[in-house]
Length: 75
Ligand SMILES: [Zn+2]
Image 1 (tube, rainbow, N blue to C red):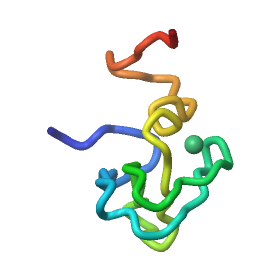
Image 2 (cartoon, rainbow, N blue to C red):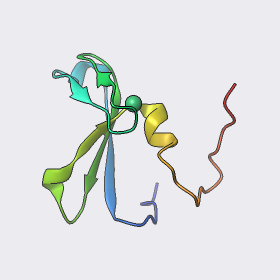
Image 3 (cartoon, rainbow, N blue to C red):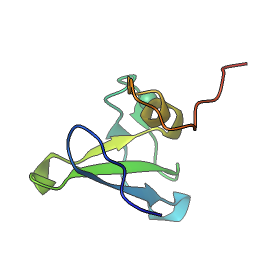
């Protein structure tokens, strides 16, 4: 899996449920990501301190205009 060419270089990691030990606020929906909920961490390569925790669906729909064939319609 190669890195996605995006506007900013992001390192994206999946956090498994057992790794989620603190609640986070998702910037996509401003909702809470609870303890024990698997999610996504996006770390800007140039600014690792600005990492964000996202719900999976919020990350997938975070307003990317140039999607590369992984778009799924909402039910
Ligand atoms: Zn969210």
